[in-house]
Each structure stands twice: as C-alpha cells, then as structure tokens.
Image 1 (cartoon, rainbow, N blue to C red):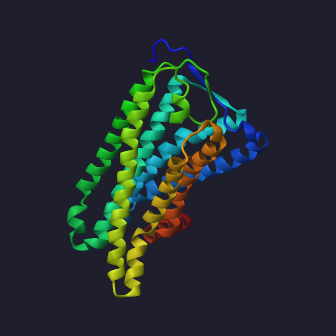
Image 2: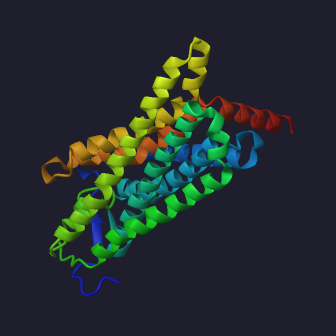
Image 3: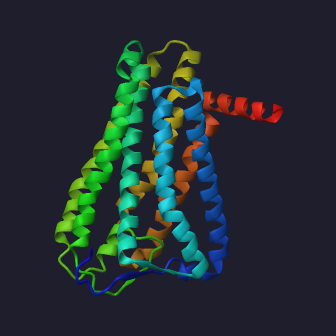
Length: 309
C-alpha cells in the first residue's frame, strides 16, 4: 500500500513530559470516554425507540451522536494505551487510517451542526413552512449526503498521504496521528498535500461557521420580536442546546486554528487537542440530556418504566 517507504511504524510519545501525571490522566480520560459513550448510546436508543422524539432535530442529533462515538473511539482507546505504556507504536497504515477517521468523522459533525442550525432557523423563523420543508425524506437525504461526501472528500487527502515517502524519524510527540506531525515525517515534497488540506478544510469550516452565525442572527432577531417573555423563553429553549453544542465544538477548533501546530509549542498543541478530542464529545450528550426538555421527559419515563418492571 505504501510502496518502498523507509519507515513502516510510528512511535507516539504521548505525555512523556508529564510522566507522573499519566495515571491521573488515564483515570480522567477513561471516565470521560465512558460517560461519552453512555450518553451518546442513550441518545441513539431514545431517539430510535421513542415516538415522541420523531422530529428532524432528534434525527440529526442521533447521527451527531453516531459521529461522536466514531470520533472519540478512534482516538481515546489508543490515547489510554499511550498513557499506560508511556508511549505506543502504531503501523504507518494504522496511523494514516486513524487520521482519516479523525478528520472524516469530525467533518460529519461539523456539517451536521450546520444542518441543525438550518433546522432551528426554519422552526423559529418559518414555523408555518417547517413541516413541509423539513420532512423525513429531506432529513434522510441530508444525512446520507453528509456521511458520503465527508468520507469521500477526506479520502483524497489520504491518497496524497499514501503517495509520500516517509523516511524518518519515526516519532510523533503527540497522543494520536494528527496531520501536521504526520506530514513532518515525510521526506517528500509535501506542498501538494498541505495545499489540498487548506483548500478543502478552511473554506468548509469557515463557510459552515459563517452559515451558523447567519442563521442565529435571524433566529435572535425573530425571538426578540416575540412580544411575550414566555414566548421568547420557549423559542430560545428550542435552540439553546444546539447553540451550546456549537460553542463546545467550534470554540476549541478556532483556538487550534489560531494557534497552529509548531514544534516549539508541542505541549500547547497536545492540551488544545484534548479539548477537541475528549472534552467536546463529552459535553454534547451532557448538554442535550440536561437542557433538552423532550429528551429529559422521555428519559425519565424510561427510567420509571424500568423501575416498575
């Protein structure tokens, strides 16, 4: 698959500079991972089985949870192994695959959050047309196209990566195979793959974030026009969970872009990556479980039924 490349294994150094803290990090990250999985699987189960949650917002939320399970499972178990062993060895193929799933599943989440902002925009700003436009067929089409395009487009980057020659050194001072530290191991000309990533990722992230801002500008204008405070509060509550999820996703992402990968700030990049790979997936199920009234009601109903059986 990789031709006549010199290195076939990658050594992930992890958190060697914080060696004594590794057991503490391991316990915290394991707990965060288990809570993330529990919350996301709970959301998927509730949305899939409850008739009360058969609305576009929850359909998108279910797929958001699926993308987060894929995203965090691709990173966290290997990171826990790195913490236990104070480092880890991965094959070059495995490293590239991890990068592929990391970027593709993260892209799915970004696009789904954008679609969900449009859903909230239609529900609040065009309530009379909402049911006709946001029908089940459109929701399925949007989600299917999102999964297909994200994994297909990112595949072009992987193909370019596979054409590079990796001749060492074979160490990455990180806890997973991110793009910049991986490409730094190549002794080939990386201009093409770096340019391709910028051309594909920056406009997509910028356009998605700009679209979300645009929809929420109209949402807030519409909410402020509602005469009663109860009506304004009810309208805002329908989008507060999504807004909090957007902030938890794009906040760390924007910081990472503002402080790009540099060899002299490796530890900073590691801890910024923890925000994006561990904490953001943890926040989303907690946000929707705590702030969404419909989801809470269904959850409490299920809990009451289970206790009476």
